[in-house]
Image (cartoon, rainbow, N blue to C red):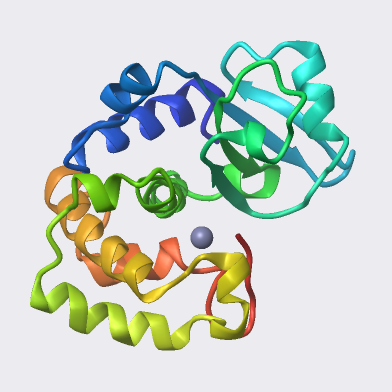
Length: 197
Ligand SMILES: [Zn+2]
């Protein structure tokens, strides 16, 4: 099972290498931290996974516990105004941590695509989307729960970015033999009726 430090390293390394503007540069430009929260469905609480989260900030998150598989929130203060910092928050549930390392990596890549779109970076410093990415993305988009798109943010542009990023990830990291397998893992909780954010 991956440790908290491993998760942080994967978020940073994939965030740095797979996108035109890297995660480290983004955090430095915006002068904010990234915090990792572990979702504990048994205790119905968030715990610190990584980052220096003050107890009062952790309590703020726990005023509104939400059980999902994984997530990424840009500027968490918009959701929790009493936070001491407008941090970005990466979330992953206990049961997802127990998946194979490559499947955790795929989920992280999925969440990083949310980061890149929600932060506005895909508009300001876009990753190029090729015609093959666009074709593949249409197929994946059709499999998502489109009526919940306002909640899931699994829009067609999201699927296009995921397809483009997955091609880079397969080339760079080789955890998956091809991008179809990576995307299938990244979207395993989001197709055929299930949905999450
Ligand atoms: Zn998602």
